Image (cartoon, rainbow, N blue to C red; front, side, top):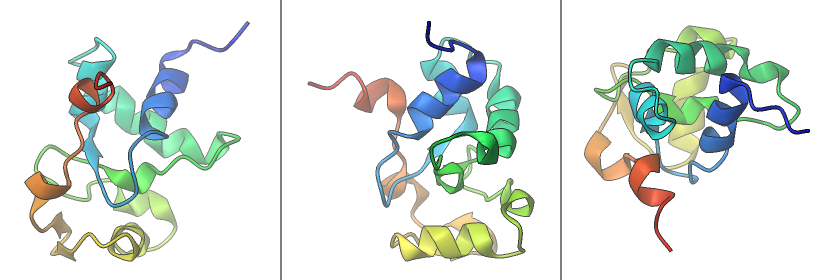
Amino acid sequence: MPDTSFFEKVYDVVLKVPYGRVTTYGAVARHLGAGKAARMVGWAMNNSHNHPKQVPAHRVVNRNGILTGKQHFGGQNVMQQLLENEGIKVENDQIINFEKHFWDPSIELHRF
C-alpha cells in the first residue's frame, strides 16, 4: 500500500513543479486541501533530503517570493544558485518577477 502521509503528498506535488518555475508553501497546502498547513509544507521541505527522489525543494518559497528556507540548503547561497541555474533571478533573497515564475498546483495540475 502506498504511503499517504502528508509529507508524501507534499513531495508528490513539489516533484511536479517545472524547471524554471516556483510555488509557495501555501499554494501546496491549499492544493492538498489543507490551506492552513503552509508551515507543515515547510517542514516537509526541510525533511525532503530523506526522500528517495531528489525533491526540488528550492522551488518552494514564501508567498512573497522570498527564499525563507535558504538556511536548509547547506550553504548561504545554495538555494539562490539553484534557482538562478534555472533562469530565475534573485535579489536580496527575493525572486525578481515572482508572478512570472509562480506555478499554482491547484490550476496547473488540473489542466488537461
